[in-house]
Length: 172
Image 1 (cartoon, one colour):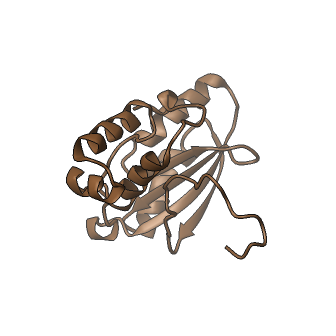
Image 2 (tube, rainbow, N blue to C red):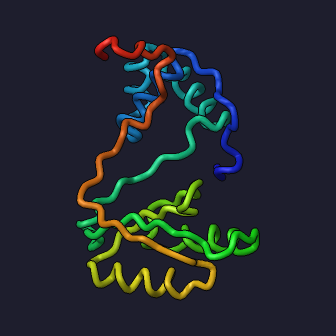
């Protein structure tokens, strides 16, 4: 599903939907039978509910997670990019080009001084320098970059937000 086709408003989720989502976030390779058992529903219901979550744009994909050092990409960096001109054509070209480069893990279009934040992974600091020179410093639309090395990356949970959050100061 393309990002532009994601729901723009919250989708109504019941307790079963939330449980299915959480189980899939924990293990996207879980069998339908195990998903049903952990969700307290029949396997046919689990399958229908999962398909419904996909159809409604709540579940947007499944993926394999790769160890970047294991594939020779042990150096990660966050690169802040400020465009020289805020012209729609240049913005669209940059937005189309960057995520297609194999080194780019994520790209965020942001507000404030930084227009884009790129998360990339390469083999070495020399490869990082060359990448910045080849793809950013020589790009006529780029006005300024700032590169920050990533020493560690800790992922968040990524699952649904509980329907009721504890009040501030509740100690949770």
